[in-house]
Image 1 (spheres, rainbow over the protein chains, first blue to last red):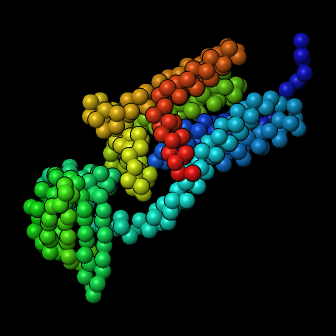
Image 2 (image 1 turned 120 degrees about the vertical axis):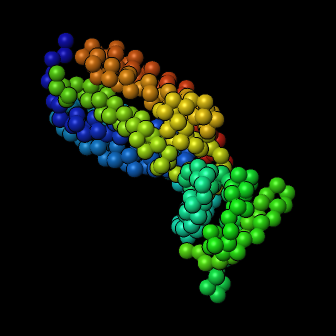
Image 3 (image 1 turned 90 degrees about the vertical axis):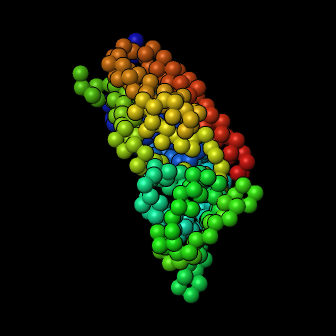
Length: 188
Length: 132
């Protein structure tokens, strides 16, 4: 029987590393947020390494450290591949540019919140479902908001609004199942 | 029994706290603060995770049919988190029973992860193959 004493050194770091590794592993395989797994994954590697070093120096069990490191490495690989893919396809730049677009979208959402039937758009994600394309053009102090959308509900609600409510002159046309809405006025 | 008397117990309890937070988030914040669908916003793609946080908010309110309509994989993914919470608490309670409990837990949890999250895992693998 092996009576060799095993120190508890490094176990706390190993516990934290394993928990973070498991969290990173689950996050990495969720498509919309997979790239953020790199945060808990990196922390898991730090704690796992600390645990491994302490365990090696003080004759402690290394199972927790090995488990945490293994899971975090896989999670970081998957997360990094997400970021590489997005970078390669120019999506990181698009993401950084989205700030301007989301201001205008928030303006549209605020306008529609004034409507009686405000549960049409609960959040920005629902606008994304309806919205195929949005362009904002600014010229001589006036902005043109061009929306291409496929939501009949949203189109019907917008048709009910007058120019004052929407902050500008509105024209609506349909072509090939897509509704084109042009709002000319002052937008934030 | 001290929390730290067994690393297995400590890991199980910490994960139980995380799982409780995951299940409480949609209950407390509902659909007010859904997780942003960045992949869809950037690419127009419709990954199987789209609408998942809103579907979770519907599930915790008992609207299973609406949740299924919001995201057909929602119940399956939610089941993973919902089942893991009592499993973590049970594991913490039985941590002193030896390595057999640990090995069964690892095997069962890994299998549950693959089975419940399979649509997301498969999509991730396919998407990364296309992107790269």
